[in-house]
Image (cartoon, rainbow, N blue to C red):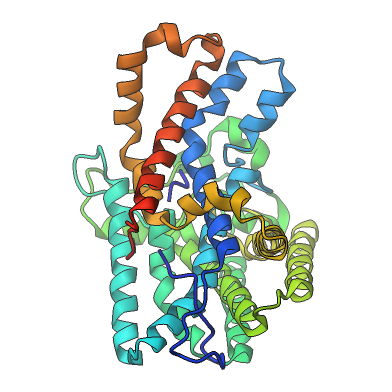
Length: 411
């Protein structure tokens, strides 16, 4: 599954004492973090895996390629942090967005209606993009936009609760989801994994013992999708997702969004100070909690099915990254250094659409007008990198053009 993927990020908290008539400045660090996430997603055009295959003895290219692909099952690479970071930042932006709407005198009912519409649009947009090139509408709900859309309204409602109830909801979501999977029967000993798309070559990634409840396409989420996705029109019955991705992952993904919500509230409550201590304590506790669940065999860290351990582990890493951006951009005022990322981060929906819709046109145009003589100037092995780099530059310049003209796509 590709992670190709505005929410207002300037404002004050629901409970802030900042006067409603005073518009607080944008949180540039959050914009920069979002920009990095989107840039990593758009950078798939660099095709580092193809470059690594051209240089099989180069550790350098293989490390880069590993971090531009999703791991097969347990643990993670850099690319696996794109979706949780994007989801986390949606949560960070939520209290700012609510505060902004309060400043305009918007009622709760109107905000809720807008949130429901936004959720629906995110889901519909995700399905639309996944259907490109398909003979009919391709109804799946495991991509980034639909996963966020499925959980966004619930996050909005929880944003109005007291922090204690938000934490209770967070714990209940993860524990309840873990328990449901743990109670779901394991496949029989002679289970034919090939029938659910698990090839013999993949068997080295299969989990054993209690952790086997979270094996690829032999779990509660798979059973749900076989029922749920076949309710929609399809060219053939749904049997399995080749990557192991699931609709029900939106439930623990909601947990990631809530972690972002906690971070957003802390940032607003402490402004203009930065709550580094609180952010780093949360980061360490969450990361350690996820690792502990994994090593004890209670729950494995698997991004593809968004296990509760992954929610904790990746959420902790998101807190670390957010703290780093706050330290660099806000504390040390490195706004010029962050500017290229801010250009992308302030137009994240546009960046997501560009990455999905422009790639073939831009690359084919570059091939037509530059030709192999130019694209192979550094050798055929590096052609994918040069072509992808030029494509990425065009993407960024388009977003810069929109930035200069105050054109920002928002849902």
